[in-house]
Image (cartoon, rainbow, N blue to C red; front, top):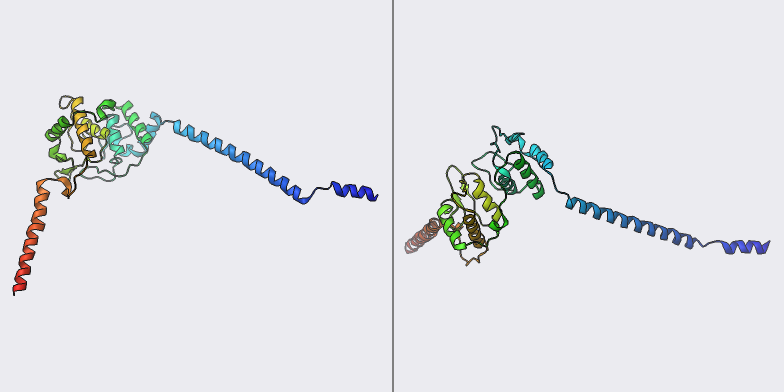
Length: 267
């Protein structure tokens, strides 16, 4: 009897062994779950990255964000113009620069933070293009910046500098309107502005500027964006007007101040 009880006591497992077994089971189960979750997350990420928005997605985005002003069928309303004939290039330009959706009515739409992703913008642009075709994206060669910079700079001075300034720094127009600076404008948006004529800008068709001319202008502006600044105060790069005003205020003002100081000291 005593021998049988001894055998039973020897066959019992230690409490530490049971805890170790439970811990090992939890670790194995947790590891399998973590690995499976990571694999599922990676699959979802790849799926979402590879998914492109469709024209129907663009239609839904347009109706939710743009139709109030431009109409459900792009026909326009009292608050916004018709979009027939503007094409996907104009939509991409206006929305990707933050000008649209319009924040408030004014002389012209200013740039502001972009409210959509690039995929959403392109989906809306595709919807407009399928419904009311117009100007579309150019060939890559026009945007490569490898055109004739000297010829492009000459064309810019002739056709664009009266509004955008010879240094492409922008300038004021009438009735609160303005031509924006082009120091940070992309090649695509420079081309889009020439082709679609946003705000107060005229449209430069092929009869005015050929594709080669547009390429040269874009190349000149890209070169100007990348050139090394030589230092000094640019004063907005507005030329003799700002420079003369600076000299008048600080130069003449300084002479007047010195004259007053000398007179006060002599008295």
